[in-house]
Length: 304
Image 1 (cartoon, helix red, strand yellow):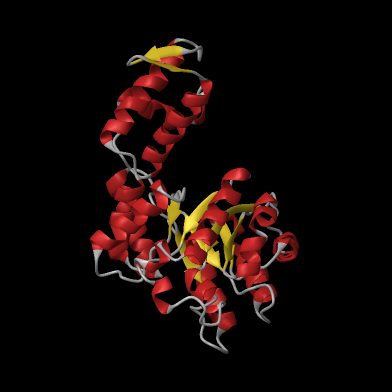
Image 2: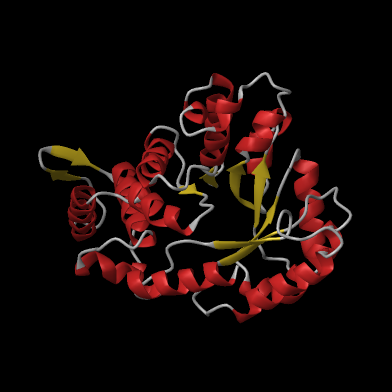
């Protein structure tokens, strides 16, 4: 966890912005019987993180005996330094409501929830879960999802190729992405376990982004971060086109414009503004005329 936070700080300095979140883990990271001590350690690390750091915590599931203690200790003490609380194995809106109530009891009324959907039944309820106002992001738990099928999905459904070709896995990913976009939430793609192959990771991230509509992706090893960022980031040509269109639209006070023989209006302005925002979030170079939008809150006034 300390290495992850240090890597985040180093890359923030390199890119000029924080380009990935660190999620400190209590679910799989805490030894049995040592959950309270681990929660205290996680809280200490979150409180000691750099000011510009983006740090979340994955607590135990809502039906785990340590869930309430996790929330009371971590959210109760470190809410002001956290970007989110991640709740695994969410099955229904009732689980989200239980997590929200725990945040309220801990005094963390404004802290967002990120949730992990890891079963066929939870996928069925993805749209209802995404609609909850406290939910900011939904992640797909691939391995638990495959395991929940009792062997009906083969083991290669968890692999680099099978997770993008098996119909049941692919359907689940699309349902989650669609639910998120329907309610303005962030779909976060599952891990790729083949962390020694950067090309495979890059290709998986490109498929997740370009074919399935995911805008974030989990990493399980530091070597995965840069390939994921590269795959999720817009290209130089896309950034240049978006910058030209947004600047021309701003000059026209957001009236329709013609650019390279094509008509653009507020619908396409939103698309290209989102592209520029994603470029900024992934540490891409932006023209100075566009970079100014991100320098201060007042700089973005009048943006689409």
